[in-house]
Image 1 (spheres, rainbow, N blue to C red):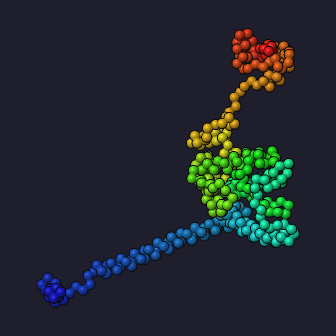
Image 2: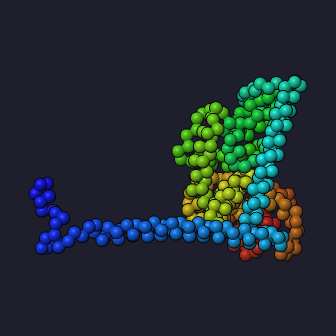
Image 3: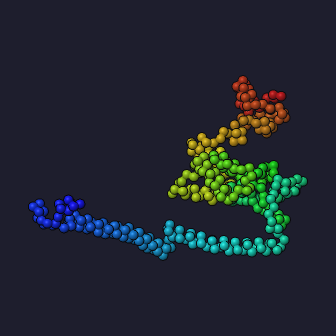
Length: 345
């Protein structure tokens, strides 16, 4: 330091005749910093101005359209939000009324304790059933609500007693007492929820009635992910992104049953959707055109439309198969309708 002090001096030398002071680039740097801060503030103000300008223009347009009695997206959204707020107020009022009715019911003889139903809790029609005789599957149920009832069941008041019914997945056609219940269960609820249960990674316990709401929601999201992957044509957007998926949330369980059916997938599904279908069974294969015995019986007492000859004999004489009719027609050279006149008994 002492050596440097002797070398770095403020006294004029032959190389530096006078002290320069602060280097000029320092003042340049300070000026650049001030310019940079000013530019940053200007950019922020311009960004805010653009947003405020857009809001002002939008409000002016909405005011003009609304004054002329028109409707656009923002006006509709505002009206929907107002409607939503009104609905919340009314729902709160309904909740208060239901709570009051529940308290009144407690004093009028309805047992507030919940009984757990089993496979033989209700007796009528000379046998035991897991559901009461007045039980009906709720109509217009969305897929999320249907999945909740499929896993945890529902609650029903029977003879002033509150019952917690079995999960719908434990029911079957044999445990339902009417033809309508069997058709709705097999054609709608089981047709949809059994497909959802095929979702990979969906591990349901044997007793799903004890599942919590968070667990039910988690399983529902897994099952819906499987439906989106397997039946992608259902969720294909025709307009804005996500519009079709929002629309499917309002579909009833019956609509879902139709959309998931094999015939609908073969008709409207993509090639990937059709490839993911399980193998066809005897119940969903395309029917072959055959000449049935019943049809032959009906035609046994009619006249031939080709030659006018009267058919004779009983219907039991015409128990022939399509192949035999073809061979007989080829041999005799006549139309099949006339060959039916031959007694083959």
